[in-house]
Every structure is written in C-alpha cells, then in structure tokens.
Image (tube, rainbow, N blue to C red; front, side):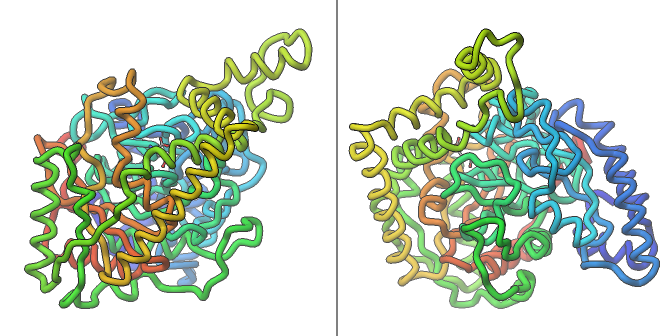
Length: 485
Ligand code: GLN
C-alpha cells in the first residue's frame, strides 16, 4: 500500500479494497518498524490518526467523502500548530508547548478528510539546511543513513522518501521544502508567497516563509496543494484569489515549452556530477519538445548575503516572544525578571538560533539599519527584477536545487558559512516570492539529486504540469530506498 500514488489510494478506499483504518495502521506500523533508524518523527499521533481514519471510513461508506483525499494519511512538519498536540518547532523552547488551536493548513487538511499520522522532525525554528539543529536529534537520510536528509523540512522529506507517510507538509523560507526534497529524492513545491496561509505556522522570517506539499510525485503534490491553498483572513499576507484545481493542467503537452537555464546556476561551486544529472534532465525536456535558452540572473550571487541579513533580522523580531513568561520553556528559579528572560532564552534556544538572533539584532540596530537591512532589501528588489526579466523571455527556469548531493552528518556543522552557501540556488526564489519545485532527476553515489523548476508568480499548475510530464518519461520519482521497500 505504501508505494501507491494518492490517486491509487483514493481509488482503493472508494472501491473498499482497504479501509482508511487499515491504511492508517499500515503507515503507523511502518513508522514503528523503521523510524528508529531515521528519527523523522518528533510525535506520532496514533490515537488521533485512528480516530480520524474511523471518521473518514464513515464518510466513505456513506458515499460522502469531503475530498478526493479523504481517508489518506499525512504527516505535518512540527512547525504547524495542532490543537491539543505538542508543537515543538524542533526546539527545547517549545518542547512543552501544546498549541491551543490548529494552523490553517492543519484545519484545511482535516476538512479534506486527511488523517494526521504525527509531527515531523525539523531544524530548530526551521533554521538549517541539514536537520542537524533539531533539539530532538538529527534526521537520517533514508538513501544512506550516514547522510543528512537536508533541512529544514528534513523529517517530512525522510518520512515520505521512506514511505512512512504518503505525503507531508513542509515550509520553505530559503529552500527548506526543495532542498530536503532533492536530497531525499522526493517531489516538493514551494508555492507563490501568500498562497498558503501562515496562520498557526510558527514564524521564522515572515516575509519569506511559505508552506507547501512534499510527496512522491508531481501528481500527488498537485492533489495535496489543492487541500492546502485558500484565502485566510487570519494571515494578512494571504492572497484572495479564485480557487484553482492544481491537477487541471497535469496532462497538457509541453511541446514548445521555453526553458531558461541561468549560467549563474552552473558556477564553480556546483559539483560536476550534480551538473551532469541536471543537464541530462534538461535534455529529456528537449527530447519532449522543449527549447532551451540562456537567461541571466545577474544578482543571484547576492542572494545568500541578502537573505542572511533579512531572515535573521525578521527572526530576531519574531523570536522575541519566547521570553519564558507566556509560553514555552522557563528557566528554573529565576532571581528576577531579567534573569528569567536571560536564562530562559539562553537555555531554551540552540546555538544556530542564537547566532541568527544576534546577527539580526545587530543588523537592525540604530546606526547599522541602513548599511545592512536597507541594503539587503534593495538587493531583494533587484533579484525580483531579475526574475521578472527572465520570465518575459521564458516559461520556466531550470537548474540544480543544491550544489552537492546529501553530505555526511556532521560534515558542515562547524562551518555555518559553508552550510549557508548550500542554499545558493534556492534562496533567490524566496526573496522574489515566486514558486519553485524540486523533482527527483537521478543519483550521484546512490544519493538522490533534484532538478529545480522555477516559475512566474501563480504558475503552480504549470510547474506541476512540467514536472508531471518529466515523471511520465522517467521513473526517478518512483524509486524507494531498498532498506525501506
Ligand atoms: N537553509 C536556510 C536557512 O537555514 C533555509 C531554511 C528554510 O527554508 N526554512 O535559513
């Protein structure tokens, strides 16, 4: 059952080949059997899952499912608040936090009849590219347990890659859906900023954060996106648009598709073996009738420095709320209020989070604001203009997601700058707010490599079409790591 697509699962449920309770139990059993090796879940919500599955079975039996996905299980990244269930955001600070409400994405999933298996591991407050900053320990890559799964949605990516869940939610502030999807060999999509509500999604850098689907294939991701998108008045940046069916264009022909390939994405930092996989994937598109041309993204090299000012600046402000007073970790026996603040934050946050808070506080301080934050915002504008120019020439931009395949656990933990540079192909997309995907395109030394597809604002249906057409011609997306087959 765990290698079936969402469409096959949906049909199986409707044809009574299996019930939602059986399907859910199958995935719960797989989590029990395999997650000891991966550490992809922080919390498994067995009771909730079985109760939701039972309710879904009743709807299915009455011939009244709420959506095509009714009765299918999913996992939520532990950044999405879940009513009555611990939401840790990968941090000691929130290890004792039980959210009093559901995130919009969680309630949308429930309304669609989805079954929640649990909450997945992640980098602390979504800060990281390797899932090693989690208070709950590193996640391992199912293709090779010596390797990182990528981050920050590393738990979601590993769980889907090992088929411990048919799909999982992720969030992407600078690459955290696409990079772990690439490193674990699954399909991930970061939507246009504002498409998926941030209500109840714990804030890291609010002008960049965006939730999205992580699944085995583009078709599955399209079905899942249908259940995540929707205007939400509780998020002031939520976009009010007419509802769209993201599966509608999947089967369109891509004959004549104009692909732009930025030379900036094939610079010296790129592992030549990754470049070869990406180039072969682009050739496959040419064989399907697409044309390829150069595009320039002249300011891409400024994206990492601009992001590592803007994201820490916003995080220093967002994380000010964790003061030991209202919720979250509180230090033992504080002497006075200042001691309470200081020790609660010193003991509750991990070192990467502290590094970002310090950088952000510095960048926003009087006298430095113009030199750093304002400058970074100006660069952000230039980067958006680059995409605007490129999309006046081509339909889609293609390139690598990550400069290397999954690296080994511990390999980059002592060198934050090298870790930050692994985001060089994903960050500019968040700065501009456009949508992008990662799809499996091959392997280097048995470790998956992703192809990145970047589209213009609101081109999700088109991107999913482009991805699906590739997945009709190749079977990289269907591969499951042998140890978890
Ligand atoms: N790796 C990037 C960072 O550490 C992106 C994280 C994310 O997208 N949440 O900030």
